[in-house]
Length: 140
Image 1: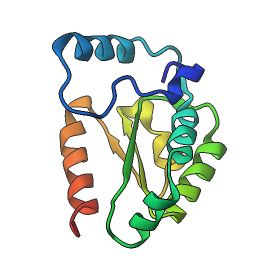
Image 2: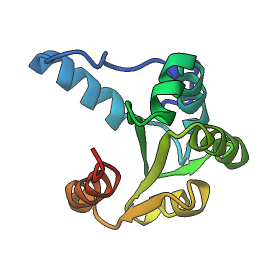
Image 3: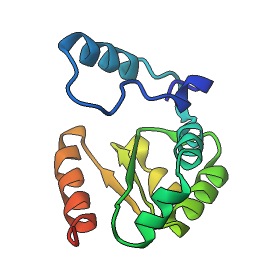
Image 4: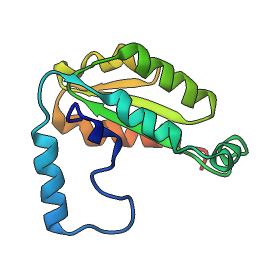
């Protein structure tokens, strides 16, 4: 999150493979995130706005699973808005999880409760992600 309106746009589209240059550009952007606070709610608003009636129907019918995992090492600029967006999407059957990275991400445990985890070290992220996916994809 760069604390700008661009946070509502994906850095890379989720379609197929991406070249080394694209991956390096994304890593550069992510490594330059300013400040200790995050505009996570901007991305969540964009995701919620993109949920079509058809997607929601398929989620309710068990035909589609949508999982949103937000990784953060900071504090949300608007935790109340994040909690409201999470509640709204969870009410539609979307799984929304916050993962705090290192102790700086501790706030995710309350902002994204009850679906929140903490990776105490960045190296723990693959384990946390695997556990979350195992839990939420068990019925797929």
